[in-house]
Image (tube, rainbow over the protein chains, first blue to last red):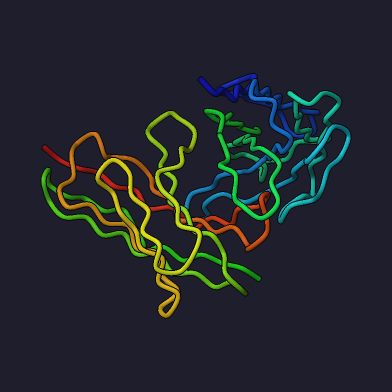
Amino acid sequence: DVKVTQSSRYLVKRTGEKVFLECVQDMDHENMFWYRQDPGLGLRLIYFSYDVKMKEKGDIPEGYSVSREKKERFSLILESASTNQTSMYLCASSLWGTTDYNEQFFGPGTRLTVL
Amino acid sequence: GDSVTQMEGPVTLSEEAFLTINCTYTATGYPSLFWYVQYPGEGLQLLLKATKADDKGSNKGFEATYRKETTSFHLEKGSVQVSDSAVYFCALSPFGSARQLTFGSGTQLTVLP
């Protein structure tokens, strides 16, 4: 069974703290993604990675960075958390593809609250 | 840029009612289109997809037809069940891109017994 796991389901942090969200997939997928989900806005892509040590900015990268040192692990970092980063964060992974779409598999999400 | 517009929610139906959730898109070329579903407390799962015009995606009694002339991909089910209560997301992937998805805002469906 394919699996994407995220390190925490719920997280509460204080403004200014450095926050690490971890995502691990066991499907040997090349692509990994970080989204945030907010009511009325759907999912918005923060960053994605198509290979180890490779990353590309998504639609809303400001205030975030990422790290991919191993193929199975993709970390999202909030260098200095702010209250407007309170959100649900979803990780996903997919096979690398060329002309055909490859399904994205999602983790259960981390609900982050920044006080 | 590419965008997806979904009908506003929430939607509340009685069991066995007919469901339609509207989805329209703006994109260049020939994107692939998808419906994802998010059950309470879970991540998103792919429900169905269509990769070219006039394709019909179907799964678990849900259907959606890729209509290029109206740039639409409406989700339908003939008889909903309580277990269909979830948030439904329409999404597109640009042609030739195996990477990025653009999502709509999501539609919350509640089915009452």
